[in-house]
Image (cartoon, rainbow, N blue to C red; front, top):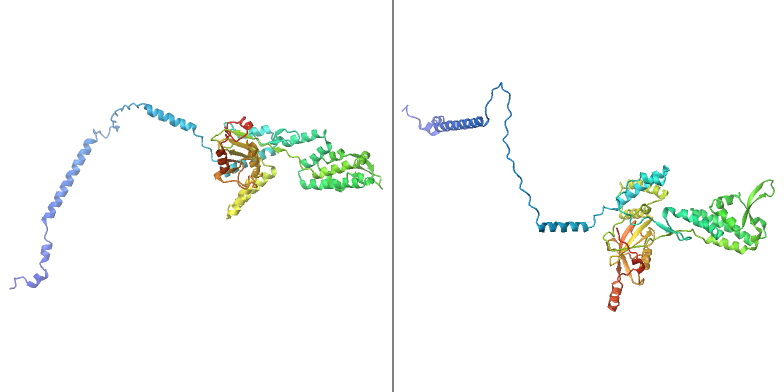
Length: 474
């Protein structure tokens, strides 16, 4: 009994440890087999590596550079010549490229402004250094190869001589013309001088009105000698009259002469303008001179439109303007500098749409002239120069004067097809500065009636004398 195992212990698994710790032979054999296979694979790899390493060398021998295998030269295959069809297609493509107009460099408003500012600053610096025009040309950037300008400059027509002169020669020519007019009518010439060359209009108004009072006193009281004498050192005369250019020539022209007379009650003498005795018989002439002096206006040279007619061209929208279109006065240059300073300050603040539009309009006002082109339905182009502040009605009149039948109704369309219906607006208010291309559109109902009438219409609506000098736009 004592040697038999206890059933309770057997149930509780007291004999299980003997089974768990019994070594298993099957896994051990597998591990041995795996190690031998791995060792065999390592030996095979080492043998292959040894065989591919090349011939061995002693440690005392210098190292040898392994020889490179000679490369086999591959002879390139000869290119086949293009077929006749391919050559014809290539030639056609090149022809299309040559006929296609060259792309124009971007001409945004800001780019234009920057270019204008650079030129203005360069001119201001040159004038401060006292450079001559030839020296300015030498210091200016090389313009060789640049496109020819659309117009050679801004020109004016002298109202006295009818001569056409360039903008920078205008004032000199006017002076010479007025000077030569003294031999014809010295009174009218001196009045033109007073109103034309004195730029301060308020000073001119005050001086002219004071002169008119002098002449009125003589006309109303010819018997009183004190009214026929004007003291040159008189304060009022010095401040209001003597400072005006041309005033002394006017006195001489209407019959005054300079005399040195004693001052009443004093032993000193003073210079006076004294009316000649013979002028007392020509008092009506003095009255007419006074009216001329009061009613006259500055003598202004008329802007030459430089009317041109061009054949149909894809270059119609391309403009190359000369510096005359951008030249500003010294005051305008200072204003431009002030605007740049204000722009820097305003860049940091929010602005409403109305504020931005107002600033854009102000920028437009700095252009003095604009070059306008009108393209007709048949492709012909009419070109003219205008003041930037002129109204659009001037352009409508310009086009009508060029028409064979000036009664034909038409409309002008701006960039984007916008109709220019308000003829009272200025070019700069419409954004048509410093240049613009417009399109002319006939009244459809009127043209339909003309076609229904069966009458033969001319090939072009422009006047024959204009078509006789038509040009090619380059």
